[in-house]
Image (cartoon, rainbow, N blue to C red; front, side, top):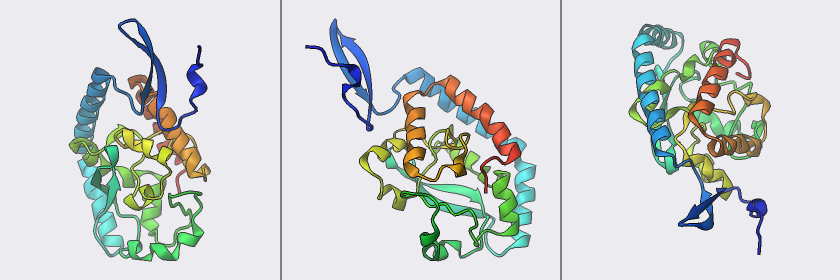
Length: 235
């Protein structure tokens, strides 16, 4: 009896043909399990995030002062997100919205432009004038270098979701959590805000997980540079 490797149309894992002592096997993997490349990935994250935190500290101070003196509220926005295997952590950004933005989210849910559990609204009235610039330039994301340094995130990986979003996930969506979340990802360099269906976003993340390699991370980082500099897809 012969079974095609693609017979099992699964979204919750990847199928790989292997063998054990000469016996052919089908191995189901939900995430990369290559030890040394993953160690190198973490080492790269640690070195690069640490170096950037030091080099960009004057910019951090400047942005902190601008945010503080142009709108009421804290400099940093803190929010609980889900990381590797659903473990919760505190994500940091420069604040780009008014101080009570979180309490007003229910007023805007009907205007969600993303089909699925994630919330996206391009003309969000809660965004401050300075916040608009920080978002378009992606400068608001820089504090996440600290999340990378302490190990909650990686430079490259699926974007970390809110716990409330994860509760609405279909089973196959949850495989997004099988790798450490990142500051940038395939979604970021593939038109991000042009994608309005969360399923398409999730498929890009699963494509990244299934094809992951150090070279793929390097390619995404290189593609992120023009996306950030030109503000492509940012709102």
